Amino acid sequence: EAQVTQNPRYLITVTGKKLTVTCSQNMNHEYMSWYRQDPGLGLRQIYYSMNVEVTDKGDVPEGYKVSRKEKRNFPLILESPSPNQTSLYFCASNLSPTGSTEAFFGQGTRLTVV
Amino acid sequence: SQQGEEDPQALSIQEGENATMNCSYKTSINNLQWYRQNSGRGLVHLILIRSNEREKHSGRLRVTLDTSKKSSSLLITASRAADTASYFCATPSTGKLIFGQGTTLQVKP
Image (cartoon, rainbow over the protein chains, first blue to last red):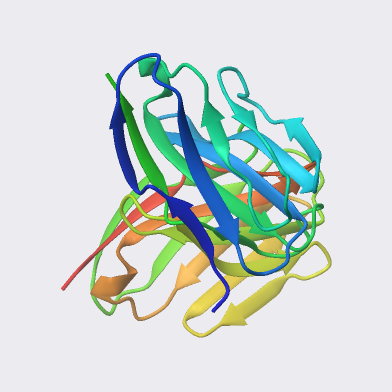
């Protein structure tokens, strides 16, 4: 079954404690991205990757890092989380980097930073 | 930036009725996509309509696209309680999808 898997689904952490949200896809997609979803602000892209070792900033990259060492994995790293990073996070993958095909989304990670 | 604006923001109907939601966008597009999101969960792709298409069907879903008006509509016919969700239109831009704010649909049994 084609899927994007995120872990963890829920996470409560304290300000400043580094954390990583993992994302893995089994469709051999070259393109992957991270979004955050906030009430009233909708879905906003954090980072994206066109291929292994190729990453680029999205609309709201501040406070986040990513890496793409393998095609299937695209972890999101918060080096020093702050309360304004409390949000619902989604990883997505797509066969086409131009968006000409459907995107597949993970189930989401609800992060709370206290 | 939010390219898609959706209307209405919220919609409540009875089971069996049809639901129509609209999306407007600002710039030229190659395609427009619709996604569904059940409460707090991941987005699921529903349908993709290309800029040279005017209408597309998938089961109980009908999507139209009017590139001259920069608008699209999603019609769900014979709605079911399981259709209760948020629906988003999305347009591709360089390296990303730009989502509208979404329409929250409630289908009452």
